[in-house]
Image (cartoon, rainbow over all chains, first blue to last red; front, top):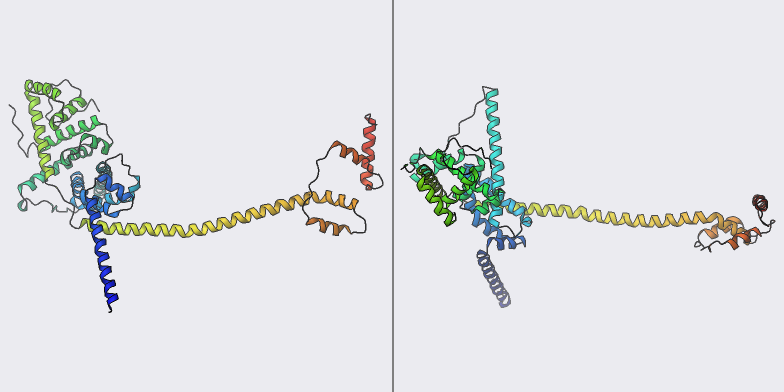
Length: 224
Length: 210
């Protein structure tokens, strides 16, 4: 290898290092951007912006979907589908809406349709059991909850999750968005497409139903 | 909101005079702490005067607190989720690219075919129009030519010669030209035409023409 070749290799390495630094700086810059700016970058073709949005929202969305559906096994599928829809419909997003609201609307729509599908499936399996007595449903043990292996907070979590599952879907959605995800009334109204008054009303009714379900589990303050 | 709403499960106080939706909204705002301070003061006075409602509201606050704690023990996205999503995204991008490639190839062919069809149509239309116009003028021009040229040239040669020459632009016909046609010597006109002309002259004279 002659000197010229060595020089060329050194120059190439330096160029690559410079490019790496530039990319890192660009990524750092993206990290400090707002969701809406990141979405604009993504619409312009920067895939890294989408990656940052995913890392920002994957946990809150997973939590929301789990609280809504009550089944951790379905969370990943729906989470992936939510982000894939964001990818496919990236050009339909307009900056007038908050990105988080748009994202929760997509996730909420998916969760609602999944919940309805599951309800239909359950109804169908019950009907088939009634038609043919030989058919039976196999009881699948719920391995997500084992009190002896869980801490008190997990037990509490289980009871609350069970109570959430028992209240009607329209109340559960708003209660989860408000009390678990801690979104504002305005955001909830936008996500669900309901008037503000209805949102507040449903939140209160949902809480009232939950209170009735949880009163045996947790001692409520005594009446004076 | 439905006014007839009744919650059988809840320990709903019955002595309030508010419509249900307004009452729900008030309670929601109070429990969340988003109520207007002035309204809050009045509402708290009301609660002090109604212990049953106050107990109900305290229970609601407790439920909300539980839900907050519940929300705090958050479920995280499954391990390796982002990597799997990236893979799926890569597949989606490739699929999009394939669709674009698939669309671009036939489009190119369709464009070429469409251009060729348009060119052929235009050429055909021009030729057709030209031939049609030529045929329409052929009969009149052959009579004119045969009357003016000498008889030594065969009529089929005249036709062949005339067929590929541009169509002559005829001057607009006027009354003077028509009257000139009446003066065409009867001997030069064909036999059928001569009879017709004579018949026309007779008709014209019977109607008072000179």
